[in-house]
Length: 298
Length: 254
Ligand SMILES: Nc1ncnc2c1ncn2[C@@H]1O[C@H](COP(=O)(O)OP(=O)(O)OP(=O)(O)O)[C@@H](O)[C@H]1O
Ligand SMILES: [Mg+2]
Image (cartoon, rainbow over all chains, first blue to last red; front, top):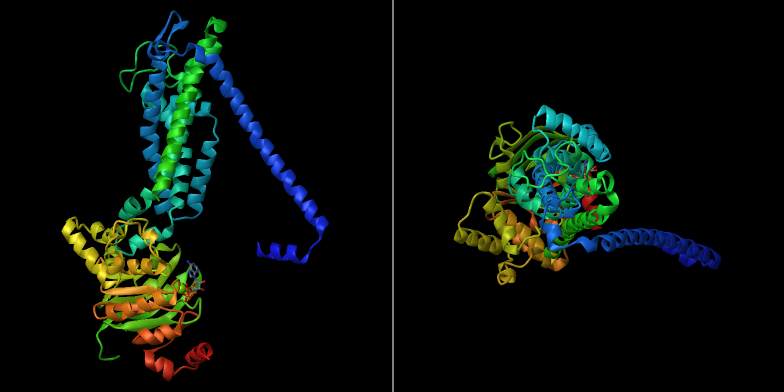
């Protein structure tokens, strides 16, 4: 910083100034355009879905099961199915993810072994979701004999979100200054107590944000639940962890590709997409809310 | 020093960060209820040595200790030693004030609470006593529930001293506790140290020879991981036995 300043003071070459200025403008211009493209795309997608889907949204649509081969009625079982399976995912993935992150960041001896573990976690985040689906069938549905159920689907989605949860939690823990840990340990406080009372409270907002973002992605996935628990059509609400369930993303998939009269149910498909997007949006807003609430506190 | 009761006795201590030997063959005795100062140029191992006394170095990966550190005649590096308990007895104040982002009250109550004291009156008492000992009570008694991050650096450092005192240690280790403070805050902490030595054994690392001369009874001079000279502070500054000590103190004073 300092050097650059000195240079520009001594070296009053107007031309070099100008060219640097132009370069900088071009750089900013490219950045602006990139952001604009993303925003426009997002707006177009959301506008498209809202305009085509809002027409079917009604209390009946939200509170009734599908009728007449899914050409009428609502999507209530799919909404509640997605909510249930996401809760199952959370119950599994959040504690496991957080404890894994605590182990990795606070307890494990840093070295080759932890590097390999972290690399594996990063790579797992890149595995296609359909592969998790197949793995879920082999492990949960068959090996553990949980059958096609909320349990199997939730665990499969949980495995899929674990890398995100672990990585986000670890980042949040890393952001807590070491002086909090050392200050507590120097008082003769046990390590676990210092983590519990002096580290986790400062990491919790980051952890929750990461967890919710992971879950909101899980809520929108089709491939992992396709063979592990999602039902084509099930007018009842799932009654236990071993029930099958309908889910919004799978319902959407059916309505837009598998239905016998796709043109006719198109509005319902858009309505389903709108509900799914809203659900994910609400979860993300929740994450933002948690983040800002905790930030204000400090 | 021979006839004083010894709180800490260090025998032939070597310390390594990985392959790098930071301390070599250190032997030294710290008398009870006195202030012992560690001086020496930057990087000579003062902080490292201080941290071997409450085993905070254990937190750094790849470190190794040889030799023994006796506190009340017990070797703290013996395998049966409970490190958590040890750190309760040997308090520490860090170079940069590091209050927790909690209220002033919670900062001081944190240690006692962690050690199982739940009674509100008891905690109130400890908080008041510790803050009084740290000469901070009058300044903060009306805003105990305010965040500790909102008080001045000098007050934060005294808060950290109060926090260290709250768990009732015998020894107080201080690593350059005034290096981040202005002269007035520094003077307050120096006065405080003077008072505290009646009840505690104090070991202080300092960069300032004036400070060592002002507040310590004994001074140890370190150079490149070696303990060069350790004696009454007066002797070190007035008639050092070792040429290196003399070079150091005259170089800086001159
Ligand atoms: N965590 C560490 N890992 C590796 N080497 C370290 C570590 N901490 C300190 N050292 C090295 O050990 C030596 C002694 O460091 P130490 O911090 O004890 O010096 P010091 O006397 O306290 O210096 P200062 O006056 O600057 O605080 C230095 O050479 C330093 O580079
Ligand atoms: Mg130091």
